[in-house]
Amino acid sequence: MLDIAFAKAALPKTGVAVLPLVEGAALAGQGAALDKLLSGGLTAALKAAEFTGKKGQSVTLYGPAGLKRVLVLGLGKIEELTVRKAEEFGGTAQTMLTKEATASILADALSEKLAAHMALGARLRGYRFDKYRTTQKDDEKTKLAGLKFLVAEPAKASAFYTPLAAVAEGVELTRNLVTEPANVLYPEEFADRTEALKKLGVKVEIFNKKDLEKLGFGSLLSVGLGTARESRMVVMQWLGVSGFKDDKKGKKSKDPVAPIAFIGKGVTFDTGGISIKPAAGMEDMKWDMAGAGAVTGLMAALAGRKAKVDAVGLIGLVENMPSGTATRPGDVVTSYSGQTIEILNTDAEGRLVLADVLYYAQERFSPKYMVDMATLTGAIIMSLGQEYAGLFSNDDELAEKLIAAGKTTDEKLWRMPLVPMGESYDKSINSPIADVQNISSGKGGGSITAAQFLQRFVNGKPWAHLDIAGMAWTGKDGPTTPKGATAYGVRLLNQWVADNFEG
Image (cartoon, rainbow, N blue to C red; front, top):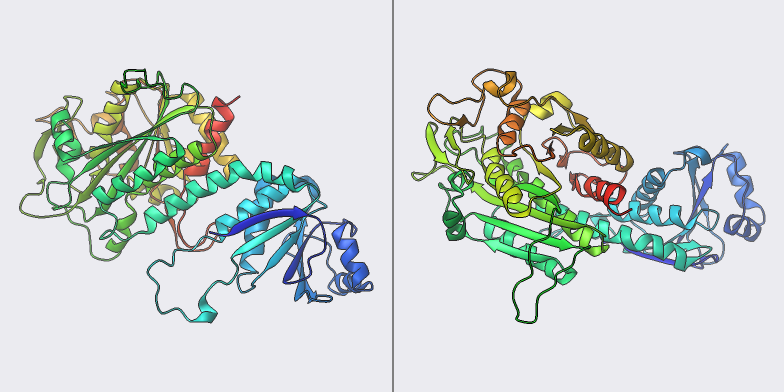
C-alpha cells in the first residue's frame, strides 16, 4: 500500500519534486518559487521543450540544492480537469516515481479536492501483490513507499481523502482476494477472511455446509459435490442508518428493513466440473470468485467510510471440481426457492450459486434493490470485450443510475436485453423434465439466457445483474489499475450508493 500524506506547501529539500501544470497556465506558488531557486532555469527548460501543459507532456531537469530532480507533468485544459482526470494523473505520476525513495507533488495551485483524487489515483496504481515473490532483484522492486502532497490547506485535503482512502482499502482487499491462488483461497478460507470486516462494524455470518443443507440450498451445494472443499455462504451487514441495536437481554439485533442487497458469485476455482474446461487458460479460473471479492471489498468500503446506508452483502462460495461424487450433466436438483433445475452443463455453475443466494436475500431481507456481480459467462466477453461489463435489469431507473455511476468512475456498463418470463430468450431455458434448465436449448446469446435464468429467482424485485467476466482481470496496465485483478465493481457500486442513498 502506498502511504499518502498531505503537508503545507513548501519546497521539498530532498527526493523528487513533481509539478503538475495546467495547459497554458503561468508558473505560480511553489512552481514560481522553484523557478526562482533555479534562477529561471525552470522557465527556460519548459520553453526549450515547447512544454505547454498538454496532457501527457513531461519535462525533467536536475533539482536545486538537495532535490534529486524536478518532474513537470501536463494536466491538460483546466475545464477538462475532472476528479477522474486527476486520478489518472496521480496514477501516471506514481509509475514515473517507482524507483525513487521519496517524492512530493507540488499541488498548491490546485484545489484540495483534486489533490485528494490525485492521491487516490496514485494509491490505486501503486498496488502490488508480491506476497509469493522471493527472488526479486533490488532493481526489480518498487522503492517508492509513499507520496507527500504539498497543498494550501492540508487538513482540507485530508478530509477529502479520508473517505477515498476507505474506498481504496476496499479495492485493495478485493484485488488481494482475486489474486490469491486457489490452493490458498478456497471457500472456507475466503469465508474466514470476511470476519476481518467486523473491526469496521460489519456484522458477519458464515453458513457452513450443514447450515446450507438445512436451509435447502440444493442448487448452490450441487456445484461443490465433486470437491473436498466444503461450500460456504457469507452474509455481511453494514447498517449505517438504522445501526445494530441489541436489547438489554442480549438478543441479537433484527435484520434491517429494506436495505440495499449486493450478491456475489464466489467460485474459488472453476474446472467446469464434469463438463470440464480446456486446459489452456484454466489457471485464470482462480478469479471466478471476483464477484464475491468485489462485494466483500464494497462492504469494507461502505463501512470504512461510514456510509449512510443500510446494506447487506451476500456471497456464495464454492469450488467446482470433477470427481466420482460430482454433479453430472442431466442431474436434477431442488433450489432454495423450491424450483427444480435440470443441470445440462456443469460449467454453467455460477448461476446455480446465485439462484439460491438471490432468493435467500430477498426472502430474508426484502431489499429495496438487489444487485449481483458475477464472472458469469464467456459470452459477455465475446459481446463487449474488456471495455464494458454487461448490465441486465428488470428496472429502467435502476439501470440508468448504475450506468451513470459507471461513467463517473470509469467502470462502464452496457445494458443488454432482458425479457419477461415466458418470452423469447426465456423460453429457451424451459426444461422438459424440471422447472428450468441451466443452459439454453438454442445457440448463441449465452449471457442473455444466463440472466434469464437468474430472473426466475428474483420474483419481480428491482434487480440488476452485472456480468463482469471481461472486467475482473486485465492483461495490461491502466491509468489507475496495474495488470492483474481490477476490483471492478467496488468503486462503481460505492458511487451508486453515494449518489442515490446518502443525500
